[in-house]
Amino acid sequence: MRTLIIDDESHVRETIRFLIPWEDYGIQQVLEASSGEEAMRIIAEEKPQIVFTDIRMPGMSGIELLQWIRENRPTTKVIVVSGYDDYQYMRSVLQYGGFDYILKPIDAEELTQIFGKAVACWHKEEEERSQSKEIRQKANQLKPVLADKLLSQLIIEPAKSTTEFTAATKLLKEDYSLNPDIKECRIAVIGWEIIDVRLRSRFVNAMDLLRFAVTNICNEIVQREQIGIAFQNWNHHHDTVLLFYDRLQETEGLLCQIEKDLNTALGGFFFIGLGLTHVFPDKLTQSYLEAQSALRQRDLMNHISYIHVYNAEVNNPFTHSLSYYEDKLYLALQQGSLQSIQATLKEWALEAEQASLLNVNHLEMWWQEFVIMQSKWMKQAGIGIDQLRLSKNNDLAFQLPLNEWGEAELGLWIPRMGRILLETAQLLKRSKPANLMQEIERYIRVHYAEELKLHQLAEQFHISASHLSRTFKQQFGENVTDYIVRLRISRAKLLLMNDEHKISSIANLVGYQDEKYFSKAFKQYEGVSPKQFRSAHKK
Image (cartoon, rainbow, N blue to C red):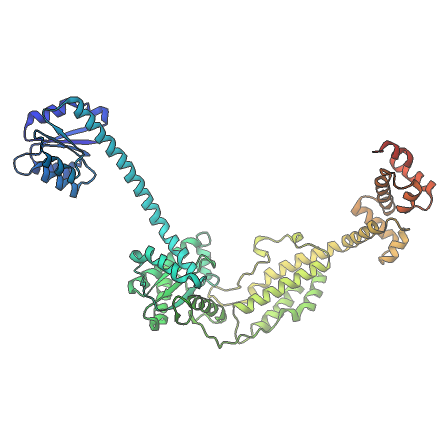
């Protein structure tokens, strides 16, 4: 910290310098000036935090200096030292922000005490200034995010749009030159689902950075023209949304320029959907939905056009259903041949690509058909979808099959579809005997109290007794007969713990018609007779 002592009398300056223990208050440098003009120069250059000044000096007075300090260095604490006990002087000192007023002759204790308070006050205010600066910096960092959230809210809740827009304009009017008197609007959307493949691969780990760059470039253009604002939509994949509210008839031409500028700056093309002109704010959502729909209507077999205007009359019939090939695919699945599976998929893809128009809606429908078909085959075989061990690149999530030009290419789906179906085929093949055994095991658990014989079960489930016996033991670790006995004895033990049933009745309940045979089987399994077991487990 620095302190400046201003007085036209050198002995006064020396007295103040001598009386205060500067180092105790963290003062590294004590400066002196003999006039107001000299003080102004030193204050401008050295920026002292604490200033002592006389009132009456040749040239500029202390009051005039106080006024100058208040205008140019308002954080400086000024202590006036004067030989005049004059109310007007004191009032002027307070009026121009003086910290305190000390009368000559100077009292050492009073001087030190007031100086200490001035230093403490400066430190406290400096801390507050620092905190305020930090808060402002954070607010400035968050302002774009808050702006995006407010504007994102506008396009999904039209009933609240007027209130929300008022809040948005208050926040953004200065930074974005928003026009608070919007009558009509038009929404454009830059879709990230159909982004240039080259851009996606280049920014694979930095998509947020790419979105930020795109939004900033768009804002530079629309803000320069003062006709709209661009923001990231927090409600839908962080799409970049452009809200136009002036010169709406020029929107298409401006979007062409925006697309060219984005291509030049980022090295990739972008597809933009544009909604129709609507009343603001009531129909803002409608224009947004139209822009989204325009992107979905885009012919994915044609990459020449980048700006797509909504057309309510466009008819996109769904043709070339994948379900027409279900039987062929299932036959290939049973063969377990990747070549056969992919050959059938290629046959479908070649036919589908002959369609006059192919858009996102068609692709989503085809992928949905594929997932439903595959899930149905798994369910029919009793296999849970969680048993399908797919890699991240082969999961069942929808992905657009776009080439580097942004065109749909169904052939890009075939390797992925083929791998999914091949793994499904392998699961079906492995699960056949296991599923049959599980079905038999479930039957035994339900019918264990009935007369069950190995050959009867084999006949019922259309397999040989030897195959049933062998496969059942492989899967459950014991043969069919032992499994039936274990179920019966387990149930009998529960019944024996209650005196409600006689032992003969329990024998019948668990599948034994002969009480003696039941007792023999029970003792052989448990090491004690049913009667002894009941006695040992009486409640």
